[in-house]
Image (cartoon, rainbow, N blue to C red; front, side, top):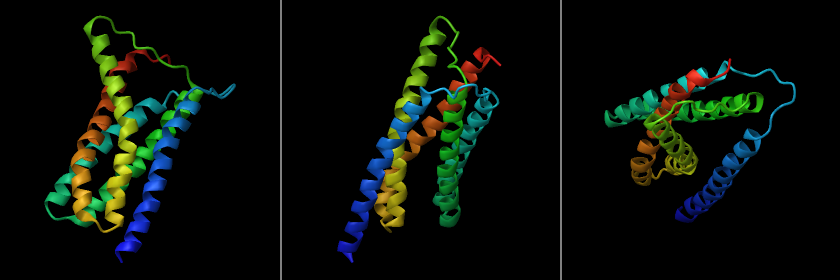
Length: 178
């Protein structure tokens, strides 16, 4: 039995590694490509910012659910968060493939605050991919103790990414060219 779990875990780890490397690379490649003559999808930023906000709320709700022994609700909320994150990513890439990059126009200390939030958001959004996948895989492998240990790191990082996604949108939205 242990050998079977170990084999499953090795397969998961390979898949997690591939996804964790491929997603940022594909996003970076697509981010730099503009679809010729495409109409800008300028309606997407508030939608994907809303998805980030909803993700933050559902992450907190999932923690409350599991602390109250509501495992099924926790599981459904976390699965929903993964789907929302994937949906966010598709919209984010679609927007950037059809629209010019918006430059933050603030000056003074707010500019440095914005770029700090943006930089930490980007770096942590990349690092949260394997964390989420590892944490999620532990449940699938019935390794709930490891799941809890990984979740202690994954949850605050994912929550930070979700909240800062909303902050980045709010801070740059006055500079969008609609």
